[in-house]
Length: 238
Image 1 (cartoon, rainbow, N blue to C red):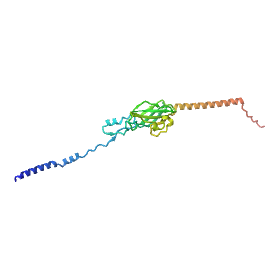
Image 2 (image 1 turned 120 degrees about the vertical axis):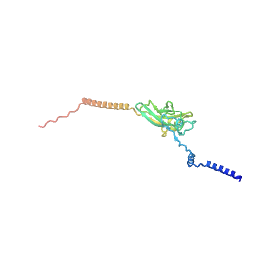
Image 3 (image 1 turned 30 degrees about the vertical axis):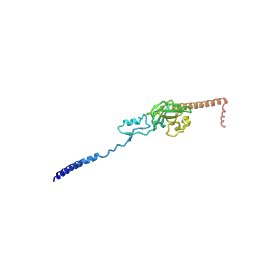
Image 4 (image 1 turned 90 degrees about the horizontal axis):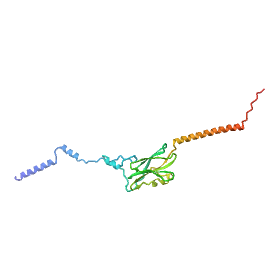
């Protein structure tokens, strides 16, 4: 009989602990289950970066400014010279003797670009350095009716992109313009100016008119000197 109060006390304590461990409210237990569901991260997206876009902000700056995590295209090691850029559209303006050159950045870290221009087999003309966001440049002073070879060069702290190895014998001028498509170089042919064509047409027309006039004058002069036999008039029959 003395042990029965202790036994009842132990049973009461055990029952209270069980009630605390398992709540009776079913809604509360469902909310706990919902809170315990694992959190799934948002899928990663690519940054708004285009290798061919003029004045393109570097992708690292886009990552830092973006409110959502984004991915950048892979780049080669900064300790290596950059890969050659890809030459794009070349828009020729014959009236003013210029051309606008477009290109796309390589999959390499780039600090600056510049253009190389060959005319004939002489040494190339090197353009001014352009920062890494530039994808378009203008060539001025091109001669009408001339042929050129233009190349885009990329450079970083480790060196510059190779033009000769990619485009064949690009360093020898337009004669070696047999490089692959989508390379850093391309041919550029300047058409004659429209005014020069008009002048040439007027000159040819004037020359033909003078030749025609000279031929007529010579014919009349020759006729007056040598004379022309006159046809005898037929006599009327009796």
